Length: 210
Length: 235
Ligand SMILES: [Fe+3]
Image: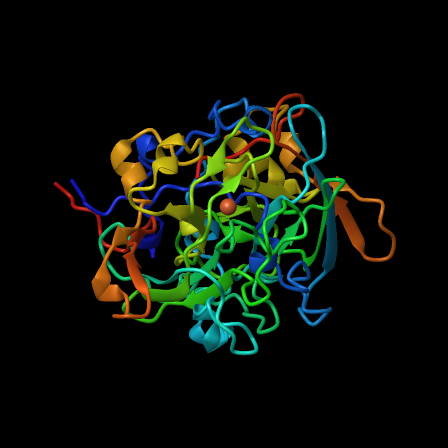
């Protein structure tokens, strides 16, 4: 019917680093300038054989600490942070390991609508004014050699009551759901969480349809 | 606002499946389980915003080195328009491209095969589209390169393309190919797309009108990113 059919994806391949990677893009805080609680995310990517996968391109996208996306489609009155774009990129090293430094995002509405402002008791998962709120989360894109196109998943934060009612998490069977909730990390000082990604097989990460 | 999240699902045969057995490494990297349905939320309707100020103006030209020297190889322009599924031009879209040099070697530490590097060619370029969704790169035609873990198998000449579009949902990475190259038919990655028409859309069209007479060839490739703002028809 339409003649405008989306272009097919193709693998990123192994040789993209020098074209796509720029220094500092795995630190979304701009060296600590963004407001909110700093979080260090560390993880490792493995394939079906259990081997680590190097040169995986990981991109994250998230709201700021107030739950506002730095994008015109979010026209809510939640506060913008000029020091926080919400986008980060990194790649996995020879051991499959990656690291992001970011801030913990606030709750955002479940509907596409910008929604009303999060009130004083901004616990996610509550309903109010017809809006369902999502638990704090980070959207993740994964590209790699051997992946014909993008894989999409989400990271959630440990110990959040709102995880129990999050609409995206709720669509995933018990047992698999926990794999999208980061584990407390072993980094000191700053808050640190761990999010491993298993592309295939035992402990496979739940992925979402694009 | 809800218009922003009315994304159609990707047409199945027009995208490569994650498991493509001829492409060996997909056997251990494609998920075994089907993907879960993700509710469309503000998270997916938004994405990083780029402007033309984000990219230095000279990055559209891969064929000229920092010192003003010209790369070796067949000079060419790659030209086209990026639209959404309603044919609307996609403004403020970051396009990043990368490719091998004329001898089929990447300026990348991991590519150590015995083809020459070209000191005047890194093979990476970027632009951000303006209001008309148009893009144009000047580069050289890349060479084919062999892939070590296959028997006598060469990737056809191709250019890698990374695109953002207006939201997380439209983010994609692809590759484009040259018309009439016999290696296209042997390529596990291109042939991994089930539908012939979808494969053809990744093959650039030879188009002298986007080249420069006596100087460089012209190839055209229009790209369609997912997403629309139009209100769905009710009826
Ligand atoms: Fe390549």
